[in-house]
Image (cartoon, rainbow, N blue to C red; front, side, top):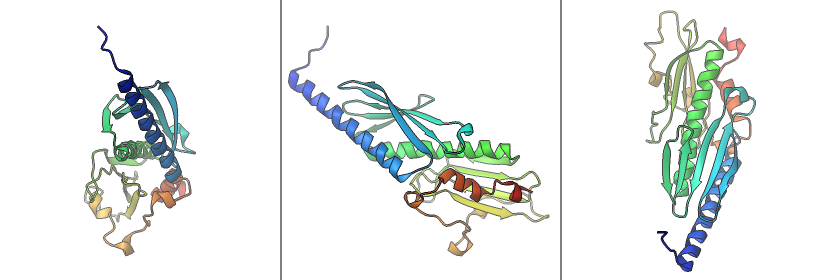
Length: 225
């Protein structure tokens, strides 16, 4: 038998779902305004009074050949669930901060994968690409570690999930050094004077974020020689 629902409970469920949908859309719009790259787009897959699904796609402008990030956001009356393309579910409840954190985490992983693909195109040797790394603040921060074919340059990139621009550090290795002897922590700047790339809040960066990152990573023919 079908469980009967009173009119009042039905109105409460519809109202609750409407509020959840409005908050999710506001969170996505805020993300688009704050982070211009990767570019975020979404469309409705299903929309009903008490159950809706959003399809969210992110791409790197100018690097569309590197693929895209796909995810789904399932909105119910009392819960929001972010679903990856591998069907892993991240339950966020009613907390929009958790929704933003989930999107930022997937975005950082997407940036890491995009950089790994682009590095292979330029014949860099990937030594370390960790999606499960954490930063000093305890927040997830995927890391990337690579060297060129001649082992004269070591590269370390960290992708924070707290909205900051990636940390990019390049170290030139002398003839007596080896990449194995240069740990990723050795590439991190010890103080502000040693920091080659200034960290700014991503919301203040109005340029193409991924393209700017690639320039920092020195993936161009001049510095690859």
